[in-house]
Length: 512
Image 1 (cartoon, helix red, strand yellow):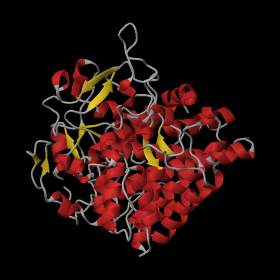
Image 2 (cartoon, helix red, strand yellow):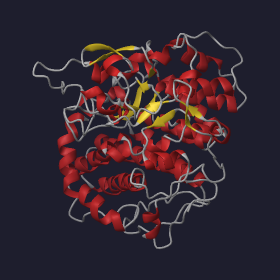
Image 3 (cartoon, one colour):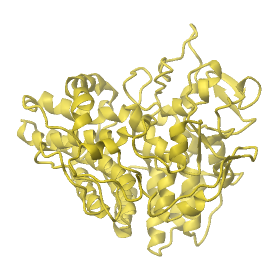
Image 4 (cartoon, one colour):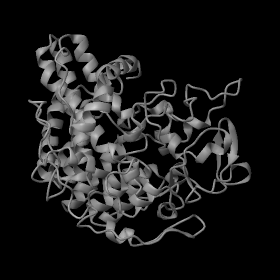
């Protein structure tokens, strides 16, 4: 996908940016397509490439979307007004850090629908046409799913764009989120039928949608829909495909050389050299100001509650979290975390740091003293790296399979012990949801799988958030919080979107 970036950017500059900055500010859920486009195979290719462009937006997978994950008991953030409001469930949806999430997701869905509607009329060979349509169905479903469980519930879903008529932009909310899940599943099934396996892609097309990614998001969709049978079905298709396996060493999952490993299913394709491509999340998690060596943003840190969840012999703990006294390599130098010249800043809320995304910052600087742009962006204000940020990996599929089995009253020892073996932990017998919840927390800490919505899905959020959160030294950094499951299980829809919807949208119950 990196080789596609220049074409992608030219297309975005042509039609994408203007749509985001003008029409979408006053028209909800996307805007009509240009009538003079969608004529040639080159148009088709540019249109498909543009789907992926907004993944790199800072308000998507860079940091904006993760502010909502900040609600969880795993995360402590740099003190900021909006972060405090999110943590305490007193947001209104107009916060600068989160208000663009809705708009960006709908803009991507609009681009997908443009592809689905127009590409059948463009002269293309069948294989190419099917792959392009599969990419559009897949990406639409991923965006749709992320909004559905963040903003929809049994009382009201989210709007389903009119795929056939792009001028019909004032679409009401679905009757309930179940309608969204059904629509998402149908799109993913179409995508899986049309897409190749990842190993059938050429390296210049890595980062495009593929068959097991569609199956993986079907598993996630059915998990949220509480359709355990279908979650098990599609997880078993992935396992049975033989296309994926866990890497032997957990820490290796988060190394640049393994961006496309057997554990990869879906991620944000990233680049250190191309400042417009990829997630800045590694730099966002790096210690604030990076000890004067690089401009880390220091936004998200692990809590003592997360650290204490790990068994001390669990190999994942040291690979996931840096604690005081840990040695690590930072721009070619072995240093000690939170000691000497690498004491954490006052904005570090917890005294820990996520280590998962630190590998790009381990490489020595160049002879002239600059960062090596093969690994890290030279612009600290856009701290992207060459490390792809995972959105769905094989371990997550195994854990979702285990969860669905347990919900069905089936035995999940095989799946849970697969995850534990790599962590260096012993087998369990007769595993329960308690075991599953612990393994999921330890395996996926600090990732986009979203601990907050795991707790919401399990019905555990109210009790979890009624407990204070702590700094590594035991001091309280967040007092007990009030989570109302009847309100806070979804987030407020941005008021700007409601204001321009001509009555098609209304606010989630309980939010002002």
